[in-house]
Amino acid sequence: MTESTDFNLSHFIESHQDKLLESWMKGLLPEWRRKHPQSVDEDTLRRQSRQLLDGLAKLLAGQLTESWEPPLDHSITLLLRNLSSARVKQGYRAADIAHYLVTLKRVLIHALLQENLTGDLSRFGDLLATVEIATDSLTTLIYEIYAETRERIIAQQSLSLLELSTPVVRLWDRVVMVPLVGVIDTARARQVTERLLESIAKFEATVAIIDVTGVPILDTSVAGHLMKTIAAAQMLGARVVMTGISPDGAQTLVKLGVNFSEIPTRATLRAGVAEALLLVGKRILSIKEEQ
Amino acid sequence: MKIPILRLGEILLTSIQVDLTDAEVMEFQSSVLHTISEVEARGLALDITAMEVVDSFMARTINDTASMARLLGAEVVVCGMHPSVALTLVEMGRGLIGVDATFNLDEGLSRLRKRIAQRGDSMLGEDDRHERSS
Image (cartoon, rainbow over all chains, first blue to last red; front, side, top):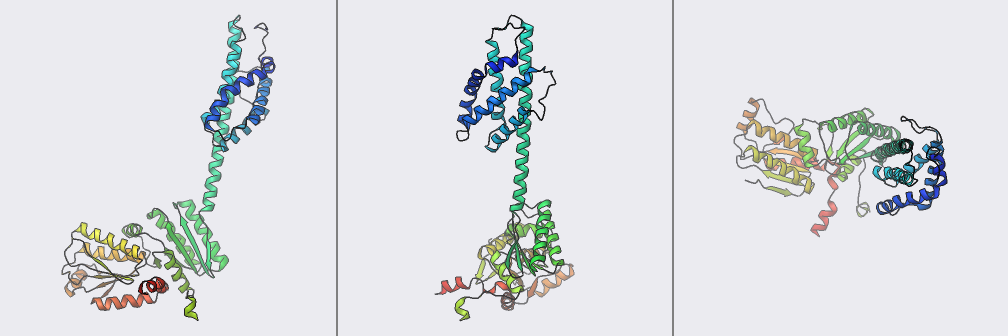
């Protein structure tokens, strides 16, 4: 074996790559398999981990100071980014992802210990410190990537939820309907209003039905938002019919002093539809009656 | 004392015959509203013939209940108010503003039916009724 003074960490990793990879996977795979039996693709993982070891070996050829951070455009950063974001999408937790690099650190240190480098203790300490710095900063990086990916996913989801939850339905000629589902906050209220006004203009609607069956809580702020929506729709010349207020909702609204008396309200959507049809001069008849 | 709420087709009829405590009034309000919602009533006749005293709380509750019932899509009529009650309420500066009132129940029901006939949902439930009668 090499003298500890000449010992090169970079060469060490390169020459022991297969052995290191083997013990790394041995430490990692049982736990990942147990937690995520569906998503562990061993071949890909091995390939990626081998690339990571390569990258690490190259990094360690240079000197690492304590404040060292992996450069953003380095191949190892990109590799970790791919690896981490793929795992996030598969539902891995932060701890699972950190476990990946923690295992690598353990394996490296264990391998170093077996190299009988204890002749020069201070040199051996330096080596351990370098391994520490490298793996720790990579762990920090992978955490950061994990959080970033998660945040991006959450932002996308809330955007698509917003899109999903505010459809405006054209119910009949000149009748549009907004089925409101879920909590109405300021952002959603504005979006609902915008969509409704757009649809009223587009379809030249004269009646708009606002259905609040799916709104769990009717309070002053929700009522305020609804009043604004109604006022805006009325400015475009549409009449508004409210439907789906629950008995408890009605009690709350009246006790809060909210005044909806100007607009027709109906308990159910079907009664509201009938009212809306009457307002545009239409009526549903049974076929028998017409004959 | 639970106040009975009777169903006359699409109209709910309820008559307050005894003095109610404040808690009982609130319970009454809530049960009227839930019944309207359950049976999808389109009218509510509130008969107060037997009430010789209406205090300001009761007056406000009648007002509120009428507004709440309207939010649930029911027309409301208050029937049979005593002349003395009307006088007291006006003197207190607290009328039954906004609530349609009639002198007796008969007049109240026919007014409700007239108003319901003008509504768009007057033909709703025809199929249900037809099935039940046949």
